[in-house]
Amino acid sequence: MAIGAVLLLSYPGWRFRRVAVEKPFLARLIEVLVLYLMVGTLGFAFEANIGNPFQQGWEFYAITLSLYLVLAYPGFVLRYLLRRHHAGRKA
Picture 1 (cartoon, rainbow, N blue to C red):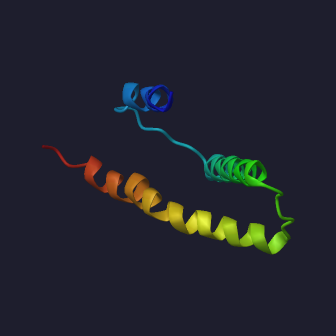
Picture 2: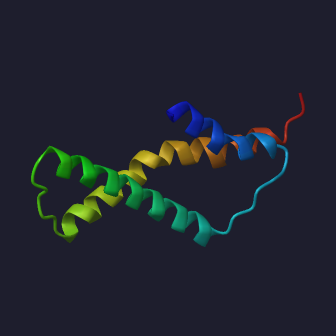
Picture 3: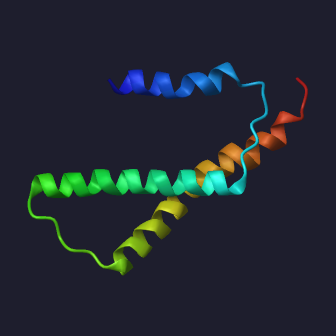
């Protein structure tokens, strides 16, 4: 199941790998926030499945969003900063 999901999600990127994709900043911000909500929902589901979920305040969500952004930064650097630098070279 997981392999099928990876293949399904990577197909558009593989098919259009020579086409430059331009996304506005707002689209990328919405994408990050939606993925944060998906990960948070998954974590909440695991916690509820184990036992009683704890009540969380705004501080918890501020810290987890900050950690999410910090841990996502290496992927951002690889995808947008390093790849574009090497894209202009000819082999």
